[in-house]
Image (cartoon, rainbow, N blue to C red; front, side, top):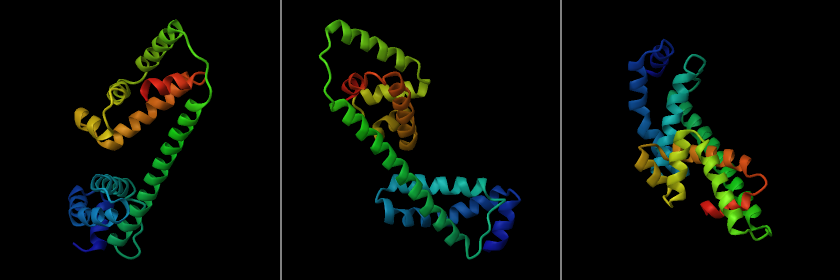
Length: 184
């Protein structure tokens, strides 16, 4: 099937046409993305996001050159969006580290116990998936290991950690240092 008829079938919602598109271009996109990421799993995840996005936008897509070049452009744009997200996450972590290193008063054992109870309460108020992911992270597991343990993608683990940190950070606006020391 040529690009034009493939696109026509895709716009009709043909899952067979989508399978053909995926089978034809998935590996090509992964190899293309490896030029930017140097990480196979990241390249595969971005390629998958591209195909999901292509399917969701199939009715409004206008391919002027070829589907291959359109997918390459989508892949590059998706790669840029992923890098911006990572840069933002790194920025948040730098802020947390900076705040943690600011002078802080010494706490008594009772104060620390009270803060620990407060942290447990914050964690217990998180969605169940966030709790699972965060507890494994606090146990020292890496994102890859957490993903494998919970049968999730690394991106999902990153997303759940980000959600957990944002919610806990809101609860700990006044005492971020304690939270960082506990998960550090």
